Structures are given as C-alpha cells and as structure tokens.
Image 1 (cartoon, rainbow, N blue to C red):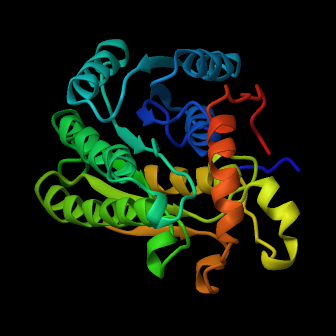
Image 2: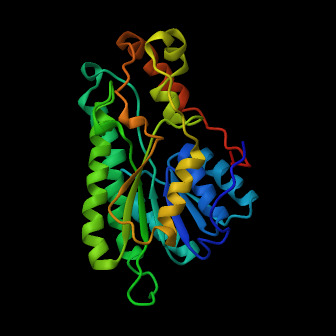
Length: 299
C-alpha cells in the first residue's frame, strides 16, 4: 500500500545528505525519502554495483545523487568520501550512519574476529564518520538567534535494551552507537548546535537485515517456536529520519527514537540453536547477493 508523506515536499530544500549504507534496505528508503523532500544525496558503500543501481534509481526520480565507494572502517575512506561530497555539492547538512553488519550466531561459535568486525562497522565506523564530518557540519548557516549546525542520525537497534539470542556482537555494537549518540549530542549540541539523534528500528520487512535475523528457513521449519512478529515498513524508519532531519525535530537532541510498534517491550524470542547454526551461513551468503532496488520505492 502506497503511503503518503505527512511532510511538505520541500521540507529539506537546499540540504545535502550523506548516507553510509544508503544503497539498499532501510538506508536506501531513507535516501529516497530525504531526496524527494528536497535534499541532494550522496551514498557511501563498499559495493560499486549497489551504489550504481541506487544512484540510478534516485536520479530517475529527479533527485540529485552520487555514489561514493568507501569502507566506514577506514578513516582514509571517510575523509575522501566527505571531501568528494563537499566538492560535488558544496556543503553537508545531514549525515546518516546506516552501514551495519549482522548475522545470527551462538556465542560459542562467534570468533573474536567476527565480534570485532561488527564492532568496527557499526561502532567504530559510526564514530569515524561523525568525527571526520564535524568540520563540515559545524559550518552551517546563521539562524535567527544563533549559529545553526548540521544533523547526524545514527541507525541503532533495540537488541541491547534487554538481551537478544545469538546477537551478542550486534547488541554490544549498537549499545556503543547509542552511547556515541548521547555523548556527541552533549558536546557538539552545546558547542556547535549540531543535533545528533538515533533511530532504533524494530523488525522491518523486505530488508536484508530482517532476512538474517528471521530467516525463512528457520521460521518455516520451526513455526511452533517462533512468535508472530509485528513487522514495520522501511517507510516508517524513513519518516522518523525525515522528522529528525527537518525543523520538525529542531528541539530533539541526544535521543534514540524507537520505531518498532512497541515490539521491544515483549520478551526476547528464542530461535532453536541448531536451526541457527544450520542456516546462518546460508543466509549470510544469500544476503551478499546484489539487492534489487525498486525504482519507485514508495511502499
């Protein structure tokens, strides 16, 4: 069902947004919604074919968009991508950190290197992008009464609010992301009037992340052990991002907005361990396949 945005079409007119992980899934929907509401879009990602597909889709809707190859784990890539964004669009107003790594795995089967990889992408990558973007985001134009800085949105999760089965690596990484959000909001909100907030999505259908966390193979073979999920849509997360990026959220800083329909309030669902071990590698391989970017992204 197509959803109509409650925001004016030009609510982000003249703004420039850089999104990590913005070429697929939730990240792409945020890119699309920010773009059709007036922003110019730069997408950072590691896979060239994903970037090219996403940029072509955005441009087909009349959205000024570029794709920039880079890995958030590498500071030199972060610096280069930010410089390229400024060179192309002349400014940066919004940074969305949506790049993430995830897979289901029992703790005893998770190597320290696997744990570190997710921490590096989600936590260190988020910090690196924020740190290198500061000099551009604090150069916003003057407001009526004070200096106006840019906006950062960090995509988090609800896994660490209690505990989640077979996701110790992601829970730790996203807990760090939430802490980064609060600390930066305190310092940069005070010093530069930059707003830093987060979004913690619940289970969102038709995304690579959901296919990893609730694989079809596991659910179909173990339906009696899996509670029905209350699924959200990518549009829901994009609308939250649009709210935080626009003047509608001008008095919101240091908050991680939970967008999950209250799902996190329920007990953590346990998937059978043997099923997770059997299917996690297959799901991971499938998730690496090129995502299909639908030209008309409205749900």
